[in-house]
Image (cartoon, rainbow, N blue to C red; front, side, top):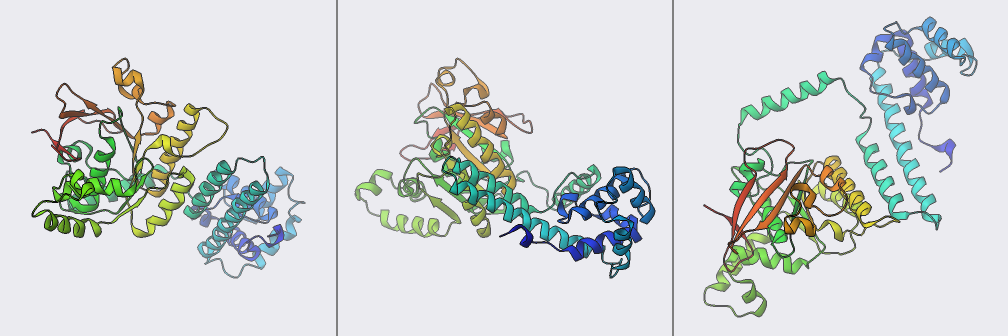
Amino acid sequence: MTENKLPQSPEAERALLGSLLMDGEAYRGLNLDAVDFYDHRNRMIFEAMGTIFSRHENIDYLTVNEELTKRGQLAEIGGAAYITRLVSDTPSMLHTADYAGIIQDKAQRRRIVTAASELVRAAYDPKADIAEAIATAASDIVASARGQDGAHHISEVVSALWDAVEEAAKNPRDIYGIPTGLAGFDRITRGLQRGEVFMLSGEPGVGKSFLAMQFGVGAAEGSNGIAGTPGAVFELEMSAIATVRRSLSVRSKINARALRSGKMEAGDWERLTAAVEHMSVLPIYISDRTDWTTTGLRAECARLKTHGIGWVIVDYLSLLKDAGDVTEAERSGLISDRLHDIAKDLDLAVIAIHDMTKAGMTGQVSGQAGLSGSRRVSYNADMTAFLRTTDNKDIFNLEWAKFREDTPDRYLPLRRVPGFPAYAEVA
C-alpha cells in the first residue's frame, strides 16, 4: 500500500480543528494525540492548541494564529487563510466526539499497516531477526487494537477503583481471583490473578508439572461458588496424552500404570468412563507442540481469548524456542519479559514453570536467587514459589519467595497422594 493510500480522513481532521476553534473547551474531553493526525499541517495546529490549553488560555482563531506564528509554522500550514477555512468548512461544532472517533480509527489502521509493512520488510531481509520482527509487530498490533491509551489523571483511576470495590462489596468473598480448588493455595493467593505471572520452580522431578496441571484442572472445574474458568496448557516437555493421563488417573482413582498397561480391575471401567465424561467437557485447551515461541503464544492466546480463557500454563519457560544472538541468561530474560506482557496485555493469569539453580537446590542461595537465568525472570514474576522436598519423602513445601501483595503465610505443606500424580494439603 503506497503512502498516499494510507487510511486517513482529511475531512474529519479539518472538522475537528474547526470545532475546537469555535469551542475550545471541547479540547478537554478529547483522547487524541497530535500523531493521530495524518496531515502534517493539522498535526501542527493540534499541537499548538495543546500548548495553548496547557497554559489555561482559550483556544480560538487569534490564539492559534499567535502560537503558530511564535513557532514559525504559520506559513507552513497555509497561513491564516487555512485556519479561516477550517472554521467556515466545519459542518457542525456539535459533533467533536464523532470527528475525533474517525481520526482515532484511521490512526489505528495506519499503525497496523505500518507494523505489517515493517514485518514484510524484515521477511525480505535475510539479515533481519525474524523472530524479533514478529514479536515487535505483534506487540504493535496489540497496542493498536487497544486504541489510544495514554496517561490518565489519577482521578480516573481512583474512580474506577471505587467502582470495583463497590461491585465486590455486593458479593464479598475471600477468593477474588480464579480458584484452583486447592484450598490452602487459594487462601494464600486469593486465587490465580489475571494479568499476573506466577513463577513456579523447584528441583527436577519434584512434581511441578502435575501440580501446575492440578491448578489448571481445578480452575476449569471452579470452586468456592465461582464457576470454572477456561484456560490453556502449553506442554512443551511431555505429550498431551501423558499430561491428561495424569489428570485422568487422579480423577478416576485408577493408577496411571494401569491406564498405560490396560490391566484394569473390576469397577475400573465405570470410574474411568465417569472421569472421561467429566474431563471431556472441561474448558481446557492443550497443545504439546515443542516449537512454541512467545510470539506464537501471544497469537494463540489472543485467539483463545474468543473462547474466554482466563489462565495459561507454560511448561516450561526454558523450552520456549525464542532465539537470537544472545546468551542463555539474556534469552530467559527476554522470554520472561514477553510472558509478562502476554499476561498484562491479554488479562491472563500465567503459570510459568521454570528451572532452579544448583545453588538454590543445595541451599547455598535462598529466595528468588534460586531461579535460573536472568534476574529479569524474578522481576517480571508477580509471584514466585518453590516446590521443595522435606525429610519426609511424601511431604513437600510450597514456599513463596515473592508476593505483589504481602501475606502472613509464606509456605504451604503438601503431601503426595500415594500412587497418584497429585498433591493434597497436610492437615
